[in-house]
Amino acid sequence: MFTGIVEELGEVVRVTATAQDSALVALRGPLVTADARHGDSIAVNGVCLTVVDVDGGVFTADVMGETLRRSALGALRPGDPVNLERAATLGSRLGGHLVQGHVDGVGEVLGREPAAQWETVRFRLPAHLARYVVEKGSITVDGVSLTVADVGPDWFAVGLIPTTLKLTTLGARGVGDPVNLEVDVLAKYVERLLGDRAGAGPAVGAASGVPEARPAQAGGVNGAAPAGGVA
Image 1 (cartoon, rainbow, N blue to C red):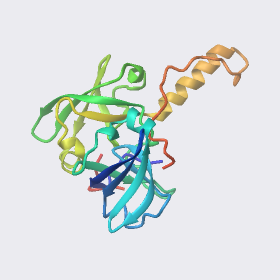
Image 2 (spheres, rainbow, N blue to C red):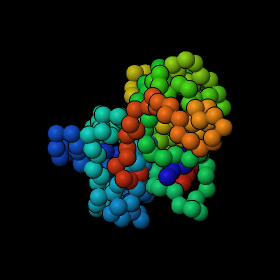
Image 3 (spheres, helix red, strand yellow):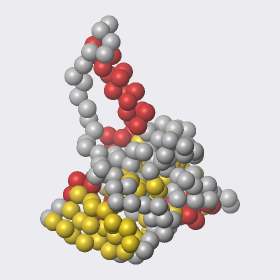
Image 4 (cartoon, rainbow, N blue to C red):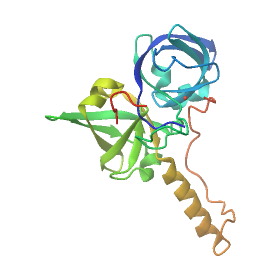
């Protein structure tokens, strides 16, 4: 579990194909590797990955085909910057919101509107995720916990403060760039519970058989605060 408060802007060192549909990714992150061990979880652009090895500020992680297909990690190349966050502990401050590191879909930057002290960025939203996104609600974009400023049928907008623009990958994302999206997990649980109750009638808790329209989440590879207060 994570909070969406990016700790460090890391860098992709190398991407090595290990099979037809998987890869071993090496990433540089001196801060997040300072206490990292084999088996720890680190979120990379919002995708929870498991640490395989740590060597001199560089950690490696296996990325399976499902994750490559369901997230934007498949487009990473050596030298690319990445948002990094270690898994939260029970004593962590919840500066953002509860983030699983399980990507729900890939969005796209639609436009940027600079202002004096912040920047408004609009993203395309996959149709199956639209019902989970509400104005003033929370959403995770490339691992960054953000508040939704505006929302449409297939898009949403957020306001990025200077700290976020400087200390995360979102400051350099251009129009057309893909981003990993994770909606608020609480919204999905509420939908499921209300659906079950509506289908079961008075027998609360009975299974309703209501079909789920969501695809499998990415980043479930068994594995993943603040850097200047990134929000």
